Amino acid sequence: MKLALRFLLFALLGILLVVAASTALEFRRELDVFDTDLQRDHRVLARALAPAFLISWEQDGQSAAESLLARVNASEGLLRSRWIAPDSPDAPDPALPRGPDGFLQVVQTGPAQSEMVTYAPIPGLPGGGFIEIRESLAPREQYVTESVIRAVAGGVGILLWCAASYLLLGYLLVLQPVRALVAQARRIGNGQFETRCEARRADELGELAGEMNHMAELLGQHQAELDRETNARLQALNQLRHADRLATAGKLASGIAHELGTPLNVVMGRAKLIRNDQKIREEARRNGQIIEDQAARMTAIIRQLLDFARARESKRVHANARELVERVVRLLQPLAEKQNSTLAFGQLEMDARIDVDAGQLEQVLTNLTVNALQALQTGGLVRFAVYSREAPHEQDGSTGKYVVIEVDDSGPGMAPQVMARVFEPFFTTKEVGEGTGLGLSVAYGIVQEHGGFFTVDSAPGRGSRFCVHLPASDDGNARRPAPRAPKAGRAAVARTGKGLAPQPREEESV
Image (tube, rainbow, N blue to C red; front, side):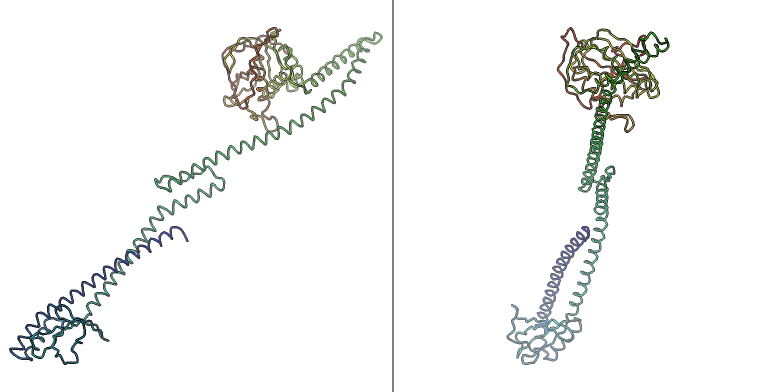
């Protein structure tokens, strides 16, 4: 059974009981008043008739007295009076209780109707006797019937009015809002957290609707957060799988590089013999020189690949920033030539000394360069610069001497919202499978561990410039701020137009 129907039935039952009890009490009171008035009328008539009957009896005899009663009956309507001798069969039982005035009043019932009978004694009458006054109770019974009909009709009218009112108010104030709340709960159960329930009411149901809307909003936020965390975990899992594949590929490449070392040495040796043999033609000696140069180049590339892939503990040593940059450029030159891009040098300070782990810094520069080449897509320019400058640290504001390594590309640049998240882990603008979003985050952590910081300058249509600031080494006494743990998700600080980096000077293509 519906809750609204239960409330309606309970309310109607209560109203019915109240109306029935009130009607019964009022009906009982009116019947008592009716009976009291009837008895009083009988007494008044008896008191008036007894002296008149006695006087008429004494003056004119019994027939005159009975004629008096007949005239009274004709004028009183429903009242009927007569004289009853003491020895008459109709005389009242002397044992019946009498009232204070000596009257005896009883209700007699018969097959036809009920009557109210009053027996009034006649003091001083020779032989005694009673005046009997009878009145039919048909009007009383008719009054009872009409009262019951009126009470029932009134009760039914009240019940119908209350039922209609409860139904209308229950539908408008309870049923409709409850249905809306049920529909909202079902939508929330189905995961539709963006829908809202109307909460314009200023009552408890309106408050409940508001809380359900707030719950839906919180669930939507938690669902979005859960989706983000799930995607991040999936990306992390894919990254781990990719890292495992890279580790396997690195081991394979290392083994291949070792295997190629001996044949390349043989090739270089044979090329030297050809180049130094004076008995053969000059053209053959030149070809031998070319073979020797290319074999030496392949040997250098393999050695750089082995140095880059070899796992070793972090160890900081004095290093020349320019030499590290040139080493990375030589390693990535084939990749740039493959996509018709140019790696060029701008300002290169010859003696820019820093205390770093060379392998980790090469990883940072490799990530920056690969990102720049991927941004160029169909070709362009990537410029490198190395110089020293005094600059305040971005976190503690302390001023010191830094060696700045710039990687500047002529690509499409970055929008402000992309640049603000460029160092966040797993954030990438590349297609699925082309990037994991960890390269710059790892680079950011490595630079911070070395006491340095990044600055980024970019805008759509004018390329991107990444500047790595590392504390300069001063004859072995480098300014070494306390290492800072990498902070995932930290936004880059874009410094534009502050003179951090000079404009490109005469460039030397590599």
